[in-house]
Length: 68
Image 1: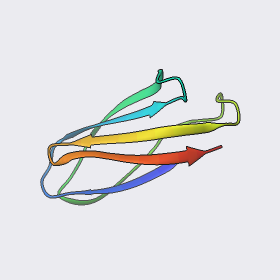
Image 2 (image 1 turned 180 degrees about the horizontal axis):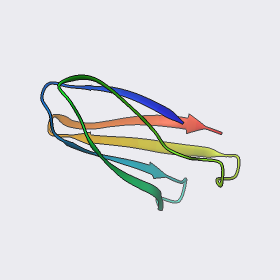
Image 3 (image 1 turned 90 degrees about the vertical axis):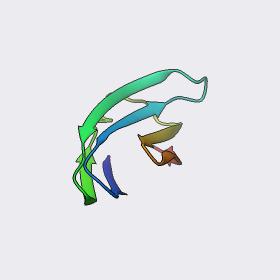
Image 4 (image 1 turned 30 degrees about the vertical axis):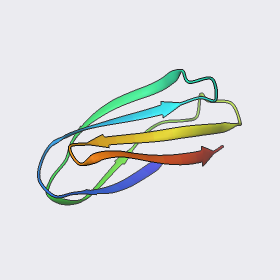
């Protein structure tokens, strides 16, 4: 899963992939740069379904629904 996000300054960003019951399945820390950022998380071990992707920055939390 490729993840693109933008930050206003270099910072530590926390990325979580959460299942329908609220369990955190994948947790990743990323050291972002100012501007556009890209990272990838491996989802090959996950079964088909709907997941929530949380990207936590100093400006707040971005939530996206992911369907695999």
